[in-house]
Image (tube, rainbow, N blue to C red; front, side, top):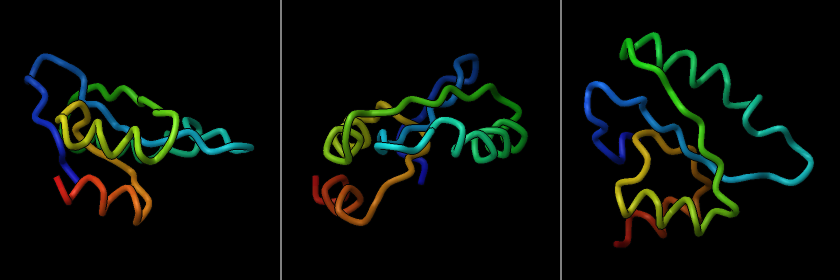
Amino acid sequence: FMAGAAKAEEPLILGSYAYPGLDRERALAPLAALIAATFDRPVDVILFSDPDEIAAAVRAGKVDVAVLNLGAWLHAASA
């Protein structure tokens, strides 16, 4: 899900939300590596506080790739 459009010289932003009891950044590392290799660009992982916050970031174009749950996707898509 490509939400934003980062400039070629900037890292792509992989966004998701923090999940209690899970090292979400570590869990997303393989996806970040795949995105970096596919687009030959660095990737920064940004964790938002909850699904609503990541949905708002997607709507605002602040992330390039988003990992969402269904509720956050619906919230982002309804803008």
